Image 1 (cartoon, rainbow, N blue to C red):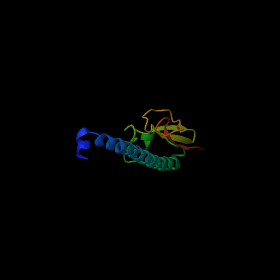
Image 2: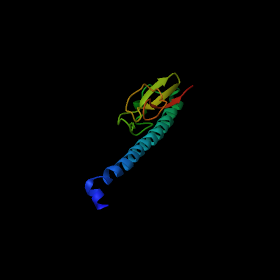
Image 3: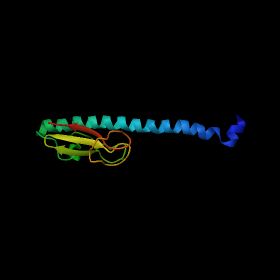
Image 4: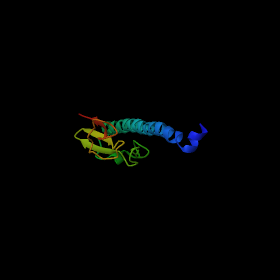
Length: 121
């Protein structure tokens, strides 16, 4: 065993096994954080809509009356993307690929597309 460690054969094998799992853990954690934050944004948007009759044109309108601060997308560390669509709206995260796909949900998460939440009316 000591000879394997000194030759560097075991450590690269262990890192190949452990690090991809750790990477996926952080991606899954960020995905769940983004989903929870989209839920918080949706509740705040619906409270605004009930008070004003329509959703706001911009997310920052919710601060400070409906949100203490603007939440950040865990994948980009930028504000979530928001688009009002009539009486509905779309909130989305760029997801793990870090590319803004314009609110288009991908077919394979982490490779393409955004993490999208829509309210249609």
